[in-house]
Length: 145
Length: 81
Image (cartoon, rainbow over the protein chains, first blue to last red):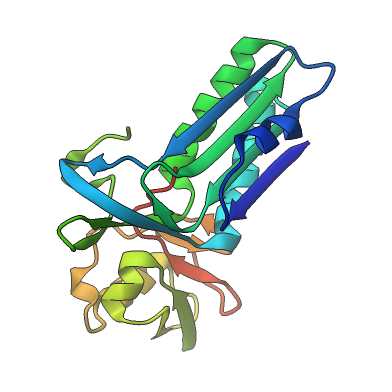
């Protein structure tokens, strides 16, 4: 199964694993992106994700299609959390299963790179000094991390 | 002439103080012409030099011709994940 979800509640890694578990799979690759306390040298207090939800879901489905075409992945779940998050919260969870480990690991890495590059989701960080800013990964010639 | 509603998000919605803007353009106008018209609106000059536009939930090149029924959105730099 392929599952794509934008959620407003906490992401449960065990639930992601359960979604992609099956007797014909020999590997499950799980990635969790979590909220870090420092970004670009600034101390983050909290943040908020927002999305162009209809298009974000469409792009995530396209990325899942590409995982199938490029890595033979037919069992994957991607959850991205929206709304307010605190330090340590899981912002994104991806679980992919496959008969073998190499395609599972590669597909997760591919999906994360593509999500950061093109899925219309935005992050507003609030810093401990009380200021707020929409994060722009393309600013200052920065590369994707 | 046609009127086009353009959806705004995140920093762009804050810039204009609204979730969308409306621009009127000649029939058959392109995404590039739409971008120029948005840039000419109050606050539009503060937009980035290169605007990313989605039509019907798909990123499109600047030469794309717009139809009145299109769902058009300006996409600020994304920061998901």
